[in-house]
Image (cartoon, rainbow, N blue to C red):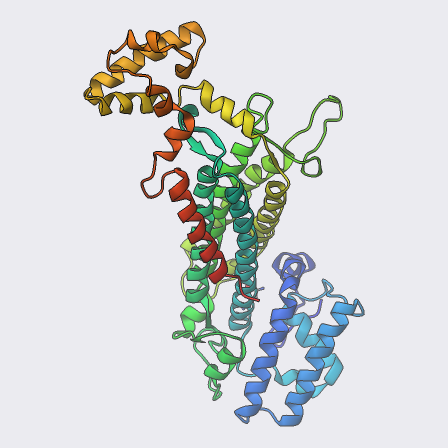
Length: 463
Ligand code: ARG
């Protein structure tokens, strides 16, 4: 047990209490940002005349040494310390002696941990943004190749109207683009520095909070020190954005699972992204998609957990807030792995155009277009709807598609039907006549693809 406090105590901490209270097992991943924050703090203390230039130099070198040694494996972050902050301070003092004890001047672990989490989360926001960008690139390239691949669009999981694969994937492009927008918003709002908030009420030292904020890439210092140490809104926002990413991935996964089934066979997941069965030799399972769908609950769980943790906390810092880490870290790791693996699965997936086309043909997806054709010939829509309904009934009876009926057969339902009907209800016509903004028609789709390309070119991730 190596602790930062003790003067006021007459007894040692009970061992179980120490272990229960400690966070080092999970906050050690904040080591890099903790050191970055300490370096900025020390440099500022020097500039403000709180410590000397020599002291600052010793601190900078000592902190660099800790980073280098932990990276090389020479120094291990061990559990005898309560948290990563104690580990760094104790090691620093061991290395450089007296100046190490001055690092914590004008600082509390409360603003330190608030800073560390913000720096760490900011990096993870950027990382997620980059992963989503790669996913969008992949979705875009599938779209480019499939502006003419027709498949049924579904409502109620029943075949509805023909769309193209580019159009279907285009829906996901929009979702993931919005997900990136959300990250950008969050990043902007969260990019203020809590450092210098002290325990809760600022400090009596002449800290230059602008200086540390700038050194650490923040837009400004936070305006209220009590808020500085106790705000976790940004983390709730990030977990909420990640939940939304997972919701989108999960819906996409569900479709991949269905489409990869023997019944649909619209797609085939690559061997490298599938798994087998220990007993059934014929099986090739879509485990990755299923796991992405399954792990969604885990990310939602982290969001709910943090919301509940925060709801009853009086200002300012409370130890409950230490619970902001484990599940949030898990959610970030989970979402990042899911976006990455899902992208790989998509990039290597085979699309069976002929299966999609046959499915669209077989499901009366052109029934609305036949009704629209009749409307074009002067039949009121409601009557046209009834006529086509009866045509479909007979088709079902005969096991045929509407296109397979002879002109004579069709004319028994309406004398307005002429031989131009076949062209009008061909799947290609159904799709390509849908030229309103947002529809699957080839012309509009190509316009969308150009816009999306432009978006990808002008909104590359940082770094
Ligand atoms: N491990 C703590 C956390 O994650 C660090 C802050 C501790 N502050 C304190 N006054 N006990 O929140």
